[in-house]
Length: 285
Ligand SMILES: [Zn+2]
Image (cartoon, rainbow, N blue to C red):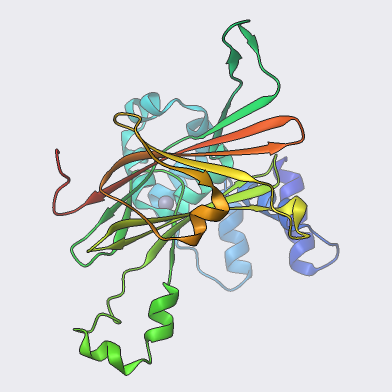
């Protein structure tokens, strides 16, 4: 989408002249964010003050080029912008909206050395990494796709429950949940990954996949496998529906989540690297 087209769509959306689909709007928002001056003007027009810092403006003025860089080159050529990306959630959102979170590879049929058309493999470009502090709160580290803080349902429900007052004020400090919503526009689906830390059990991992194209309530069968990134050992394998039924815990370490769905004759495969750390030290580190 061109910048001009994106601005037109935003205008149509704001004044309500024309229907703008959520998908087009999302694309337009991603495109206009590369023009910080326009975003600033728009914020001012809407009576909101821009919160962009000097570094934000610098990063966004060259975000197109940064998206094209290999990670190692990015670090070499613009280390200060990479640091800013790690510390500024807004800029990170802009960066990943433009870059796209998936890198796609066409696997080769190793016997015939030709690309296999019946399998599409996508990999999350950068690992989802979190560190748990002493209170069990999670903090995202690195410059990967932005995770949102979700209030735990249990905490919200028990906030008025007086029994929690007897448990050392646990309800007040109920750790938050980090959640990544990773959309795959090509497949019209969204993979969401949530992590919550529990001192007794470790990192609780949840994973869901939602299909926009099958909102009649028939989700496509999806398999989930979880491997250790260190030695490829398998921690879990089964259907994603079964996975959602029981809480699933992992110790600090690096893992990868593998999801596979079959759509007509094609296998779709997503690989999501994820890592957990504890601020009190990771075993073996
Ligand atoms: Zn910024």
